[in-house]
Image 1: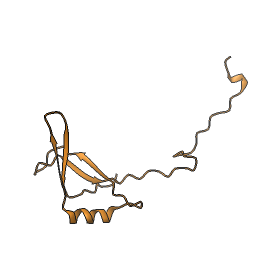
Image 2: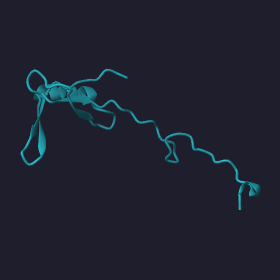
Image 3: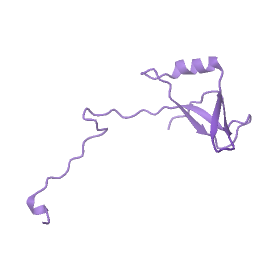
Image 4: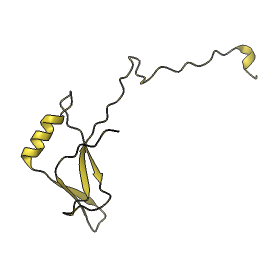
Length: 97
């Protein structure tokens, strides 16, 4: 597994009395622009993952933001991700009725 690439930011979750919550994200614009330019994929997207931290950070951060480096396998023209499974041939004497 490759090392995670972290976006330098502050991400804190705020929970409300009614059970709802939001994650407040603070990031320096210059850092975000540089990160986006360095990690934009071939389709022009910047895919990020926001995940809960195991422990609250020094400044109260409850979440971290990392680059999503997942690359799906190329699909075959038939829409299947891998080789098609072949079922064995059925003979009349294989059917129990």
